[in-house]
Structures are given as structure tokens and as C-alpha cells.
Amino acid sequence: MESVLDEDLYWRFSLAVYRDEGVARSCLALQAEVGLDVNVLLMSLLAARWHRRPILRDEIEQADARVQAWRRDVVAPLRAVRSRLKSGPPPAPDPHTDALRNEVKAAELRAERIEQQALAAWIDALAPAIGQRIARVEDCLDTADRVVELYLARAPACDAEAELRGWACVVARACAGFRDACLTDPRGG
Image (cartoon, rainbow, N blue to C red; front, top):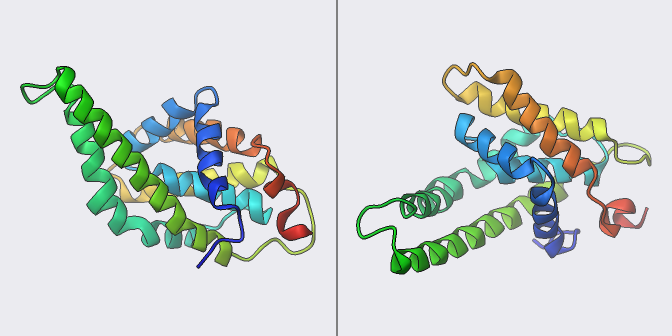
């Protein structure tokens, strides 16, 4: 199924948001602390912008379920290999293994982009807000909080809940600030 959004919008959105101050660090911390899938977070936030409403927890669970096997069987192993090549095993790190690491990183990014494309159909299937209104920062903040809640519920006890919510807030604010013609006048309305 082809998305109603420009296919490249998902990737442009992710790259633009990720470059915002503090976002990369926040995303990596959320991933490391509770196993949060950054693509689920980013695409949930894009969905909030597109549909001009907060995304509900059961909807986020649907998104996560849609990509869970891909994340587990493809993205996570590529990430593990890339990370492992930073410091070993011997002969890593060296120029030859650095080149291999860059190739694995490129494959990991392609896998992430495929995951986002899988989430595109999920975004399309969500119900939009009733009535025309502008996308609100609060929609992104509420959505980010729900994504964190989902992953916190699955993680072992975490003492950094407030910090996690703060990191998610950084990402949500960056997403709310993203400007693209596709998001300013959804579906021609």
C-alpha cells in the first residue's frame, strides 16, 4: 500500500529532527535505557503532526507490533555488529574493519528506512482529528509520553523515568518544530 504522504517525507523528517540539538543524544539514551524503538517514537510523532492529534497508546502498540520482528531480526543484529566493530574483536578496530563498520552502518540505515516504510501504512490507517485544526506541540508531547510509557512498562525497573520523559520531550519539541508543506495542509484540506 502506497502512503498518502510523500515517501521521502518520513526519512526527511527523521533526519531533520535527529539533527536538532539534543535529539540524537536523547534518542540514543531512550534506546539504551528502555529499548525504545526510535523509529516508533519518530513515526508516532509524525502521525501526531499529520493527523493533528495525540496518538493513543493502543495505536503506538500497533505500530510497535508491526515492526517488532523486523527490529529484532534485522535492525538489532546490524546495530550490534556495527557497535561491536568499534572496539573489537581483533583485528578491529583498524582501517579495514572501519570500512566494514561503515558498510554495516549503511545497511543498518537502509533497514531503518525500510522499517519506516512499514510504519507508513500504519500512519495512513490512523483516524485523523475531527474537524480542521492546526497540529499542536501538546499533541507531540502527549504522544512522546505515551511512547515512553509503553517501553517503560516492558523494561525492568527504571530509576530514570523523569529523565526518560525529559529526553522524549526534547524529541517531541523538535518534531513539533519540523516544517514541511505536506504537514501544513494535510490531504489538501
